[in-house]
Image (cartoon, rainbow, N blue to C red; front, side, top):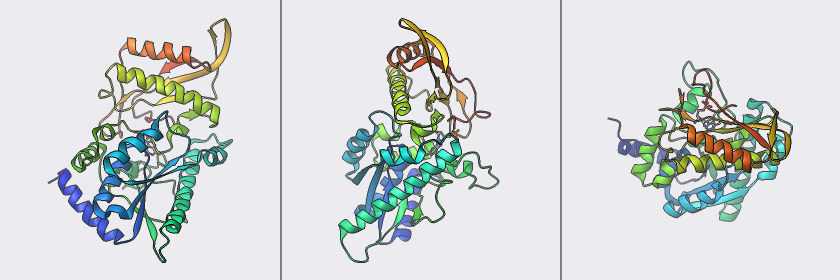
Length: 326
Ligand code: XMP
């Protein structure tokens, strides 16, 4: 029988068997999956676990603070935050191809973890202490869509599956690999992960990096962060968070259109709203958001984000469109 309790019992036993008394680190992204994976590993091996959050500069507004406050406060887990914004921007400079972006982000991510591993070993200072395990919140649909499942096509290299370098210096611990999102949420609730985290909408590991169509720059990230914060704020205010699966906000950085704003002509960028309804992200439909909410979001973004002069709505289901644009 599938119950969250059975999954926890099985996974705790499997994690203990895999890890033994070695040290383990977990990539904590701020999302549901990595939080639940971390909570499972903590249940299994306690403070052998250190969580590492990589601040790659591709997060949405306020997210790093949220990880520090919500997750650490409720679980008491050891957390290290690494500020790696410059490193990612440098590695991504000039790159426009979506798969290339995903692979670079995945590669840099692992390199940062190798640095974290070294630092943790040095701090622990105990001879021979090993940190050779890395926990990732990979879900079943990630495995399938990265070409890891049976008969699956490689649609996208989800950065926590397909984008890992060949010379990976870690053994992966992936306790959610057979689960769908709703099952992960059930497991998280059973483990006592707070509701604000468990019910969060999905956000991709590569973050805003795959929501800028075109080259990623610090300035473009800032434009997108401001537009995204407005959209999220208005959707929450309208009480729609539980009606939508997620709503990517995408900056078409390589596209410009003519507009008229304030006292004259502008030549700005479009922002795309991509609200979707879904059960498991394998398929999705576009969410029929109320016109007045769409209107408020559009007006606010074009008023408050100077570089944006057009807001468009994506009305494509998945398939044929994927949820994210890249
Ligand atoms: P797509 O765009 O493939 O997205 O329809 C399906 C779901 O997966 C999320 N997503 C990712 N999650 N790493 C992740 O952890 C990734 O690289 C990644 N790419 C997409 C996406 O937000 C949606 O929920």
